[in-house]
Length: 261
Image 1 (cartoon, rainbow, N blue to C red):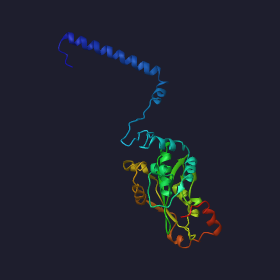
Image 2: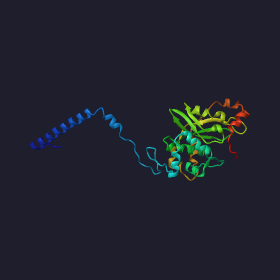
Image 3: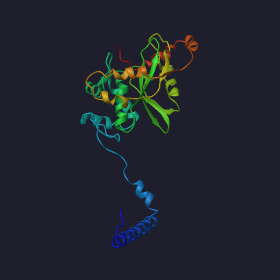
Image 4: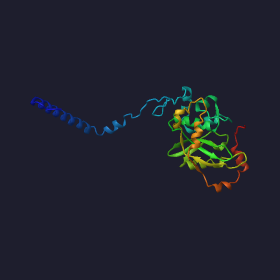
């Protein structure tokens, strides 16, 4: 601003005086209400709710592209134990498929990969991140477990034809502890203990662009991501060479409820 005349100078000085008085008044208001100020700021909603193209809201409570019916079904599974019971009720299938959760819901069946994806989807719509872990074996099939955390401790949800390879309560401090809890129950039909390594937790949100939750095509992108994930051995190779076979009683206990091929 250029002060060219005496009248202009007076006008500018008057404006500055009024602005100064306004500043003093505002500061007094802030000081007088300082006790309430943090509460009022804390009460402001800082969440953004824009929808992406696949229906996923930034605050994690969108449709995720699921049909209203499937969304209601998954949201009704509000706890990990409920999700596990739902998986147990699905027919176990022997098939070379990689169905999305929406496809598995429609068909009413699935194997371990599809069960883990369905569990991850149910966890996601109820506020958990969609995490899974790969359990790698020898002379046997790999196994996939949906992960969740409660109080900083890990638990697992899984679909399996073997009784001991399903639910885990959240009592494990690390993923290694969780993976080891599956060791004694992980065996092939010859009774060999076959579990060898586990992967890092893989967040399936990375595959949202491939519609892993709703695709009508097989979502082979998921097992590809799991195979590429970093894996950690559970014990040295020399230990694996001397592992005893499972005893008959434990073998039969793990086969309880198994669906025959």
